[in-house]
Image 1: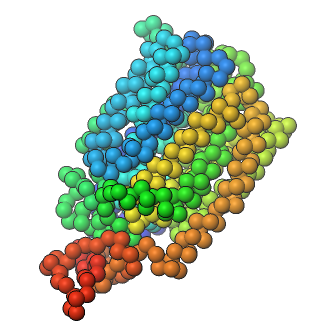
Image 2: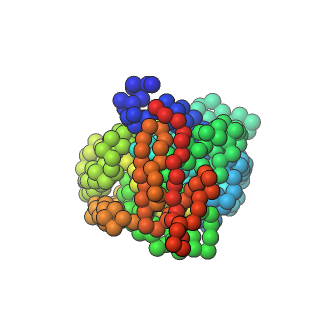
Image 3: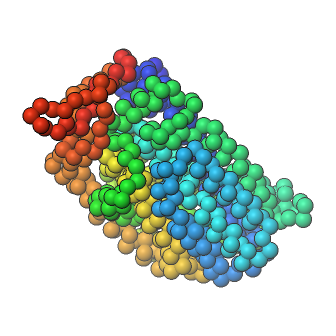
Length: 508
């Protein structure tokens, strides 16, 4: 037993040694590839912004709103393939599907290094968007299909941190390319950035092929024993996570009639959008208002300072993850972040404040990016009773994010309005108010469902596993497991009820 791991809540108290071994294996098999995959994806996708500030703008004549259009065509590719991708993920082996997509977007990233004009760059960005679609949403689906609810917050936070780490590393990598590779082989430093990103991306896909597992009900991992696979499925049943039912004609109906699909669609996208100023607007503010000389030293300083908002989001993600798992809820962390977001966006809307105050607002918004992953964990927990609905609802929620990312930069966050972005900050303040008002809604609906006894697993006898006796009860037969001895019909012509029988998986 590791007392430190138990003290910080990495493992729930009282967990048996057998289950700890399983969770350690899952962390290794799932988190390593998911984190490296998403880190590489974010590195490749965000490289264009650092390249833009490091010579691409002049070399390819990307003046006016062309950066926004490049951003838009990327999101068009992502939106088109979002829901179809996650539907494919429920029937295709994830251990091959997601790594194959990574190989493809790596090749399109490489192609970006050799574009000669704006039109070629648009084509590359579109196909980077299409092929990178399975990455984030696919990894989120797999990650949220293996862990207990008390374990999800911390794992989602670690996974989320690959985003700011990718963005931070992109800035450092661009500086290295400018300082050491600029002019090598007749290529500018920004072109070398995309080449180096590809060199990093391609090996990650092979990690997925060899180690990444599918969801528990379709897991063929060579690294887990049959006993561990059975234990993994039983853990999920104890938490109320139903096994896969497969894609049927009723799947989409179940998706769009479930309240979590719609409530978290709006709540997640509100929390994704309100700290937006901590990204591109912050970077362009540094370049346009603070360091206006177009020297290599200033460019390097801008790229480095741009990483500060990402760095604080890493710290806040881990803080809020451990705090919310310890508290056993997600809403109070989100409420805290929502208040800070409203304050900071209001400061930036006023604008006539000191540069120090603006810097504080940008960095504090970066801090508020941290709790965003808790909305994803909350969505997964609320749809525990239906794996397929959970998968498609996650994709649907992400489609909303992609659509907003497509249109917002073309309307309220236009590059020509930098660094003031008056319309952008009116937009952000409005959304900040709405998100604060919306936080109590899922809390109320969850409590209503519990009061009505909805969405629970049915059983007649307790599951005996890993030292616990847990009874799961329901009225709607979300899932069932057959008896080991075949079962029998009930007397008096009654139909047999779905039941989960005792599963012996070891003792403490």
